[in-house]
Length: 231
Length: 206
Image (cartoon, rainbow over all chains, first blue to last red; front, side):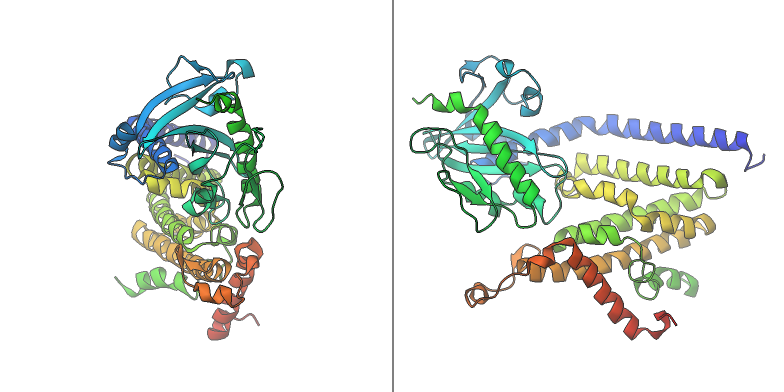
């Protein structure tokens, strides 16, 4: 058969495309359950990082059972509502009309003190960024934080994942002294802002840092009614 | 291993280096070398992808129609990278998180296509595999050298560990901010090319 002929070329391309498609479909199907499990463990680990606990892939689920005492959803008015908190992603909630959104809250007890873990999602330079932030029982002071990203530039924007960055948030407050929600600003290293707490951004990762800044304002701002309900 | 295969494996490390001599893969050399760790991960991933895509293309080289060979190459590279990514996600999730952004960069790396086109299409599987390893390591070598200098002078660390002591900073030393920005990678690559060519006179253009 003529190797350069149209018929051969056509048949060859169809065969190879079908073969590759089959290979990819099978790989994806076979590995999906294992991947989903890894993603759930990763989420737990990030949550544990937000309450300053280091975990491994093997002990994460056990630590989660040990520390996380309650998980529930709150609505736009800050009231507790129906639903499964762990599987609720801010990503899908943010697409809904404001009144219908539900936000996950996880309660943890660390050394006898109650902590609230809140979920965040925003946009970085190349793709989504997300994370968890934990607050003390005054619903104001940051106890810990953890950030993740999909594809920020390694060595620059991707540094938000490192503890050097997330540790900066510890002890910062989301509300000003009059009780208004002002968020925590992420500023260029060395700069300052008035009337709100701030942390240094990543040098060379300006857009990602601004993304974190916007994410804190939007995602934690969404919890404002809940945070204002003091016990 | 005979003389010819040795040359195929070791030439890309120096006198036929993909980055400094063939001038390929410069773009990813800029993107991932601001720290040493991503540079090493990228080097390993690219080596694996070039070696195996070279092998596969070499195995099917006699059946590929000339007119669609580039498309077939792309298909093989993209499929290979996707499968590797899926496997990593299932069995080495932490590594896959590290690699996230690199996956796309590997597919577009001109060295991969360059070696498939220039070597694998015309050679037997074993030499093609060696050629892939050689070129991957040659590329990785440059990445690691650039990453080393950029992290050391740009952040004062290596592999995330602090190298330049605090006392230096107190005495007025400051990290070079330019080092972590992409232009400095180009300047460093140019310095490597300069040193390389002054040592190896055969590479100098008349």
